[in-house]
Length: 250
Picture 1: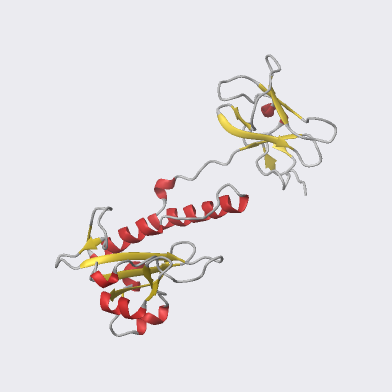
Picture 2: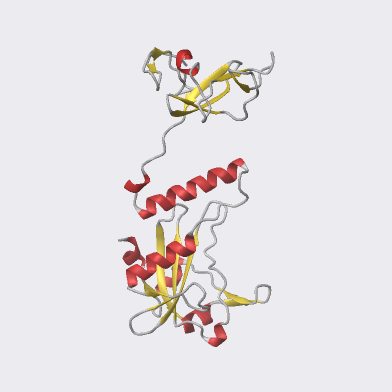
């Protein structure tokens, strides 16, 4: 689809709109493309069948990569659909300082999922543990312990020990199983603070469970030498469990 409603994002000249290339620059601006060191670049197809290659205009030596700069602005050159070369201005990154903590974490998860889909990373792990500790400790006015402390993560003013666990549910793994709970027979904590999130790290539900309740509801796994707790929403109906979902959602 084309039209006459596109402007070169560098110089502003009017160009036909190309749906496939919403940020493409004009031929004149593309001719000013330079490397990061300021050397002029030329882009071309490898042969009649297409392909992409770049070289330095001053000596014809090859230039690796697609990134280039036009008037100091980052652009990317590539083989165009059906042949030729297209140069597009790279979209600027958002001003992350304007985003809330949860918005940043949600964006982080989406980026990891996109990288996993491209095969860049093998998993879409996210900072659930650190975020959960921060979220719970601030909401309950807890003092976080050193990361090397075994068995619990924080204490309250009365000295009660809290182990803090978070679980992010995704389309690929919707199980609310929490991470390993070790050495329950030694009572390494007094209260378990458990939080379940959606894929974008918005709180779905959360609760405080005394260790006696945790021990009674969890099962021992010989494989991991730990106890496993499936933290389903229905556990919030247990009178021994304190629902803190609303507290963490504010």
